[in-house]
Image (cartoon, rainbow, N blue to C red; front, side, top):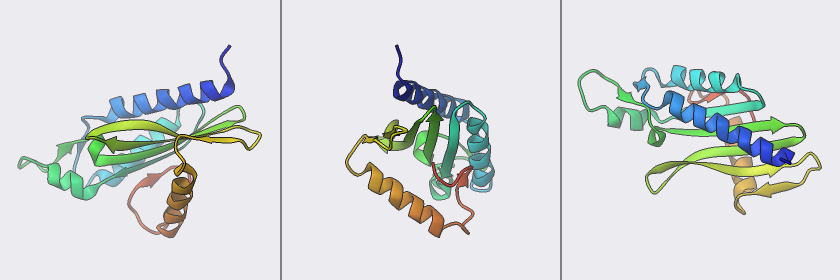
Amino acid sequence: MVTDPQQACFEAGIKFGSLYHQFAGTPVSPDSTRSLETAIADSIENQPHCAAVTVDVDDEAVAADIAHENGYTELSGHLMEVEMRIEYEAVTVRTRMEMEDGYPLMKLVAVEAGSGETETADHNASEETADHNASEAADADDTDGAVADTEP
């Protein structure tokens, strides 16, 4: 029998798979990054158990990737950072996508049981999440990045 934490992790994988493979290759320019961030976050949050999605597309990296006169490039993993919060039953799963050796890897950051018990994928995950949340609050007036919920 599948446990709630296992199902929550499965749900996170489904969300990341659909996010990446649905939007990779989408035309993006420095002028369209904000609207694309919002579209990605809003569309993935439509899925069951998805409580929050944060998408940050790097404007400078997008501009650097433009290799023709038409003014756009194709969205790929090295151009964005993504975090998600999945809630299934009494379990919360926190995930993020980050580049590792030139490849976008989707990772579990933490699995939090309803009892308050937290398992982290690495010893710094809780600190990184707290740092990110503090940074996000400090940048609340900044227009970069689409945040569909304040705590991914």
